[in-house]
Image 1 (spheres, rainbow, N blue to C red):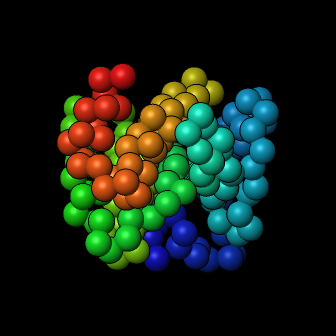
Image 2 (image 1 turned 90 degrees about the horizontal axis):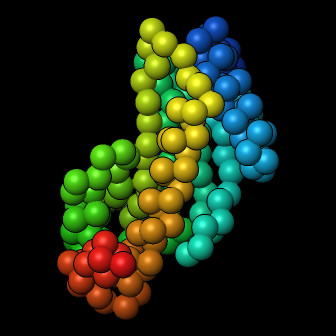
Length: 168
């Protein structure tokens, strides 16, 4: 199981910092009128997002000890075993030069995700920071999703799929 879907202790008791971060994230989702669900007993919020190119699940996670906010978009398709190397190449090409966030691939189950995060130790998480993390994340998944699909479903070479996305 990966970090996003890992089961965490059901007796979750947030620290003051974690509670403040978590409340800011919930406030952001409400102000942006986004539907979400708070996972019971864990500092994770789950939601679905619909972009121009598909619908996928997202997770907002708080790491208490590190005072970090992490946001994941989970690609709606997994890379089959016979496409792992091609998807990994596509992902590496996509990540090259990317300033905020990165794509990740779980070689064990083929899960593809985009991750954005921020460390707020000694500071606070603001609406503006959450907005940047959230919208950068979902826009990157939306932009690159057709490329992942073309590599997985249509046997397009990773380099060609990246060229098509990044030259459009």
